[in-house]
Image (cartoon, rainbow, N blue to C red):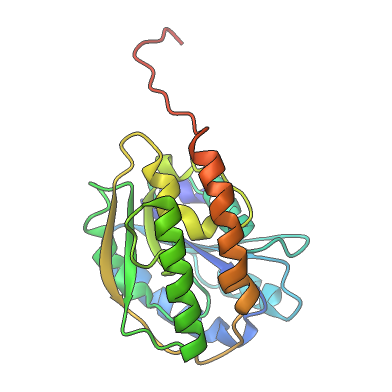
Length: 243
């Protein structure tokens, strides 16, 4: 049996070359699991790390009964890691947080308060602690994405989200999908989204995997792919069956 089925909430943590963050991840996620509003577990997705992240994850999960992992054979990117985490989750709710811990797992409890009533509850990073270039490029990309998707989301890149798993599993996945989670949820019948301010912190270990291309140019291109898909998205509801 998939062990996540024994929990109400699964936190997905994509990991790519984050060996220096492993001690903090174990400490902060372990603390959250003790105070979570729902019975919770953590599912690390090792995205083909080239450093010691995979070894450290195996050790961490062996000594923490509520922590699990899966490892890719090769690096496939953030969207693929999130998709794999959702595919392997069988709890009623699924969440996502970045391994850099620029948001805190403690704030999942703020989002979980609203999880029953919304398909997606997501954070808005308050007082962002990023560089001027990162903040500026993010604002430009967010503005363009809002114009193209008309989803009304202030901070789609906030790496703190909680979804009802049944909605998460219906998301059409593609490379770059993680930037469009709210828009993709809103396409679904009954897919309501709520935004809540959460805390934001500077990165204290490891290196950012993002640069101007994948923070700005890439999302611009993906917006056009989303617009194409939006017009062709299929929604249906079954009124009766004898299965």
